[in-house]
Length: 191
Image 1 (tube, helix red, strand yellow):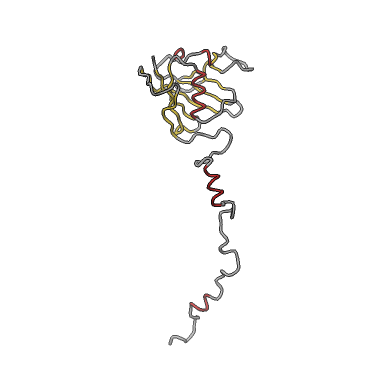
Image 2 (cartoon, helix red, strand yellow; image 1 turned 90 degrees about the horizontal axis):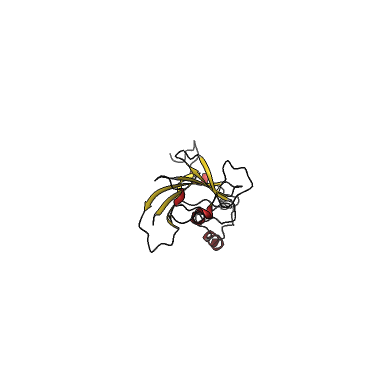
């Protein structure tokens, strides 16, 4: 049985990618779910794969379902289409689009074919993650949910602008320091 390794790049930043291994007998729907899981996205939106060439031009679609839009050719359905049936060359490429409103786009490239199936892996599986995944619904902190705990513990809401109260007025002016520390000009005190 062939094990296919795909590298899935986030289109806007190719330093953010996931490597997913999948059996050639599994479907594009399985790959679709594996990509969403690897980038921590939910499964609530429309999605489609496009066959692609080396220039990332969009070809025939492989969709979750047939959508209400014009097609040049009837789309293949993900659940009915095995990965192996669409692999025509050793560096096959696909474009994966998720959530047509937001337009999340990922570049999917076959990077390895192996005959060795690992008994330790449940396919499909993410075997490598590089970079911080984009946040599906807004900003994502590097600390994630842990930042809320830090914010509560140290009450970071005080002094919201990031400045303390030093220099805001009373008790910290420099008046009177000059008289004590510096001799006056033109005085004959030192002679």
